[in-house]
Length: 399
Image (cartoon, rainbow, N blue to C red; front, side, top):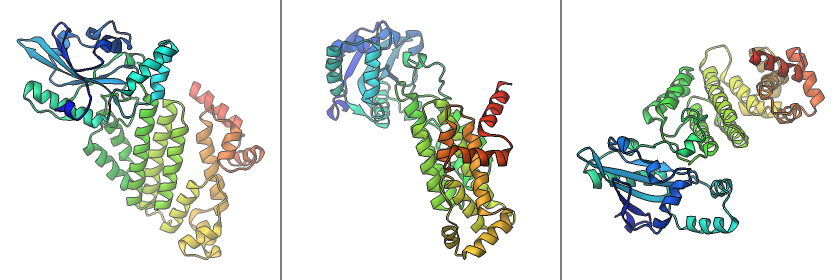
């Protein structure tokens, strides 16, 4: 049935891992495809003492992104048959990763061309469809019905080479449960800081599959981008203006795309979550600050790199320039300009914690114009220069 809609290969092995039958045109390459992960043979993928206990199919991926799904038929405690669908390439896997991996394996140029031509013949399948094929395979072999969430993802060499990156480090894993996710978004919508604890719970519940064959950076970025979008929508439902929420969304997505380490992506993610819930929380507080001024503050925080147009802000709130300026100072205790500078310096302090961002870059991003002006304002409000603040934070971290 599956072969009638895709050219996905189908291979059957016996308990000794010998191929019994196959319709796969990659049959003669089968051993090589497994060995690209450093294993000696297909036996390196399966341990009979383990697979005889399996109750669901396994999806596994080698280091160049080739993916298989296998189902084991056990009789009298012994492995009788292993049914394998594949290889396929998941649609979130890039040709660049394949090229890079082949270079690491020191493939000759001619050999690489041959291999890439072979790769073009391998079907590209979405993970959800591949999981559905696994559910079908399990039903055909065992007569039992399972869910896609029951499918297993064994550790392979790709993950061993990235052992410092556990599944929990690839935060916001897309296998987090729907119910917990909805609980998190509802709390954010209410401006409840408990949502941060629920988010940790959601991350822990999502540990498991590694879906990008070792491309942890892309997987982490995609996951955070999805979470930014969900948080922006929840914040809008919680009362944050759509303009502010979407402007923040654009900023965080851009920051994620520019991040070059998992640590930076994680820091951006944590800052984004706290930022959205803090803004919604502030809107919910009865602190004597009107909704119009709170929204003005949100607008300013989302446009720290720009000169704030008082007339624009006032007209958005339906006030004259003079009335708006007076109302803002009365409720916030400072002028619009002073509030802008305080928020810029607060954001600069966050950026200074990353020792890889040049001070000039921070000055440019936050719209100070020149580094000397940035240093002057920063020292006026914090009592030290940006460089001194960065060194102070390094010393604290060292302790």
